[in-house]
Length: 143
Image 1 (cartoon, helix red, strand yellow):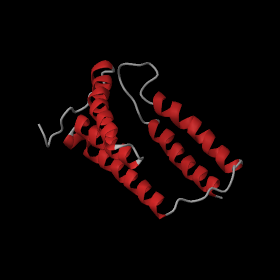
Image 2: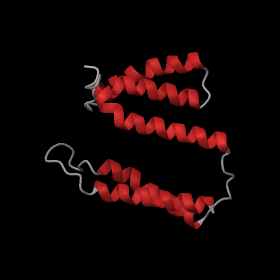
Image 3: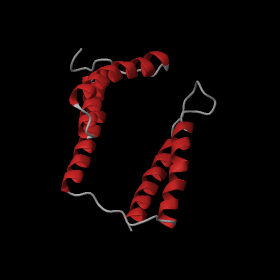
């Protein structure tokens, strides 16, 4: 039953994702338009979620209180990342998110810190400088 419930939830999310991407338009750039990437992700997600509904594998065991607490903290970190990315900036929020999620998943503190120190500016350089996606280095609260 857990697989079917998860499959139905993913189906609703993926269908909404694809439906919302239909409104993406641009007057320049790629001839395929900006909606192609969400569709490349959304359509296989719809198919895979339906496979969970139709052919469930097994009844999963639910996480205990400690596991549910870690999952809640992970969701809170990701929500804070999304909400605070612009005001705080990409590099500080990515540092906090990578470090927080790494520690939450059991990374030792020093290696987790080193990964966050390298990942935050490295991802900024990759996305902003190499791929040309404009990201706020430091947000409006800092700069």
